Amino acid sequence: MNPKVKDPGWSGDPLPRGRHKLPREAVKASQRERLLRAMAEVAAERGFDATSVAQVVAAARVSTNTFYGFFADKTDCFLALCEEEGERLLASLEAQRRDAGEPGDALAALDDGLRVYLGWWEERPALARAYFVELPAAGHRALAERDRQLERFAGLLRQTAERARTLLPGLPPVRDLDVRAAAVMANELVAAHVRAGRAEHLDELLPDLRYLMLRLLVSDEVANRVAPPA
Figure 1 (tube, rainbow, N blue to C red):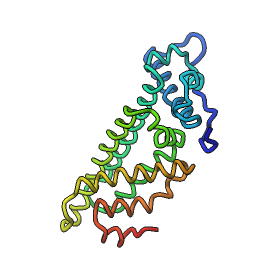
Figure 2: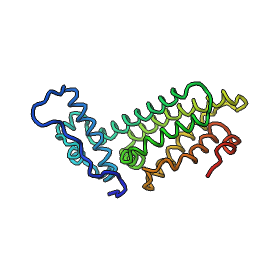
Figure 3: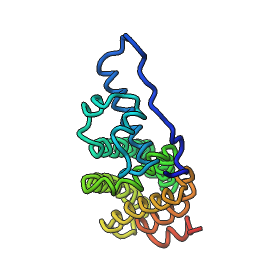
Figure 4: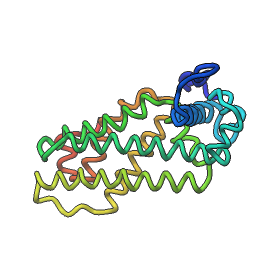
């Protein structure tokens, strides 16, 4: 077990006992959400390999039949967790980018995006451990899902790089390699912090990530001038 995981004894809040007037779809949505949350908590505490459907069902407070009504097996459940939470994170990042409006203070916009990214994982330490530490154990389908999300993250970073070039038109064209490297290295820096038991302190990475993003997406000169490494 991992003693650093927050709230390892979490269990889902059950639906009201006996007869109730909740629509069937609301009941199913609640059950599915609790199963996904339970998967994150149990996998973070015990590791994916040691996680069983029975443990997830017990934590979510639903029946085994209910679990198999949604998922084929524990891997299917874990993949659904990674996919849906990844979509939520990317939606938050896209919303932040839209809110930034027209090009202006590029560094402030970059910082805002990094704070959204780091804060999202920091508020979900069990999910962070399940995703960054346990995902490889779920096999090639899980790794393919991670690659898909990294591609979308890289797409957002490309928009950041292009935004910088509207302010600094003398910069060379954006290179695909630099954008991909920025996405992968950001992912790995966060993963290393989570593995070190620092999932609730990811804000510590902001200066290093700012410097890294500016070097890869803008230029060495800008990175060293406005965000020198700590």
